[in-house]
Image (cartoon, rainbow, N blue to C red; front, side):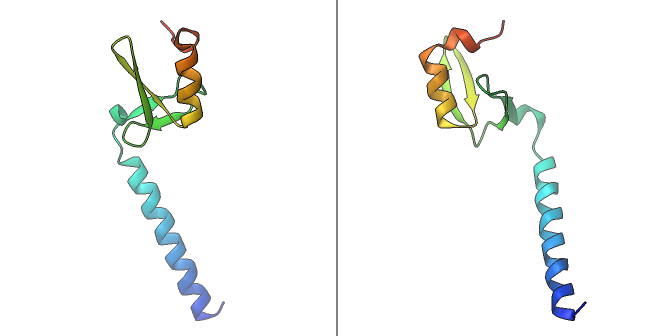
Length: 77
């Protein structure tokens, strides 16, 4: 492999490892489950909607809007 290709590959690998390490740093309390689609979402990046005193978190705006139309359909008690 040429030297430039090796350096490029090394940079890409370091970037991937760094991004994975930062994702692991999120505390479990920051992770929520979107009640509409079931995806895991980080509270700080999620769309949110308060219903009956509780805040629900969504990975997409569309999930939030779907929830708002019929919240009881998605609330698990």
